[in-house]
Image (tube, rainbow, N blue to C red):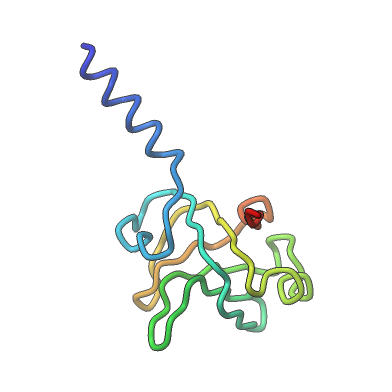
Length: 115
């Protein structure tokens, strides 16, 4: 019984952990908090695409921010470039790139840089 309780507690602790954008690929279909640096923002007609930790020829992770999420494109363009952010939601994959689609502005948070 004690082992079952320890396993349950470790699973709860793991669920609260954050993962890097590089680790997101291993968590497709799961809900998680993914953190990384905003390296690129592209604006479509109704959606902003925010790339985290992008390196040449490789998109590691994308955050989709539809207009309906509550964030204006102007705010996305002004606030998020070069920021470290964490986004929480279900990790899906599109065109081989892991992503989270925001439904609420509360899903994305800017991490404060440590001094």
